Amino acid sequence: MIRYHSFYPWHREGAYSHLMNEKDEKALAAVRVFNPYDLYSKSNEPIDVEKLRPYYQGLIAKFFPETLNW
Image 1 (tube, rainbow, N blue to C red):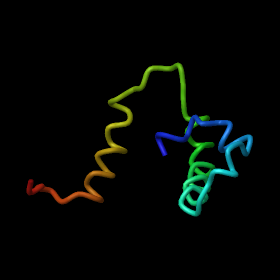
Image 2: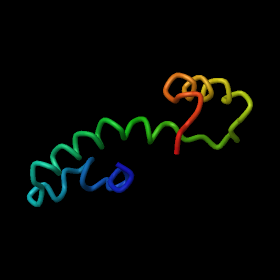
Image 3: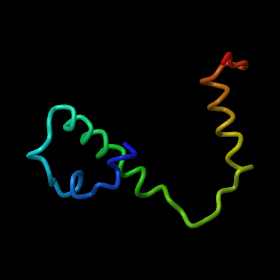
Image 4: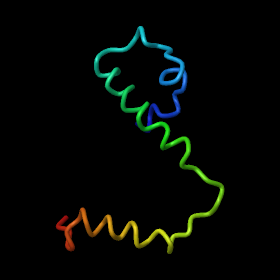
């Protein structure tokens, strides 16, 4: 995703399709789904970390155990 999200000739203009295989087709579909969230999620405003902290702490609590075993 990171590698291809800014590769506009491929995912927006349809360039290089003659070089694609089945794996590339799946990657292209995923990039197209991801791209709107990437393009419109940037802001010039600084991030208020304290305002976002409860949201991310909630995600961590939901998806990670209280103690991690490394």
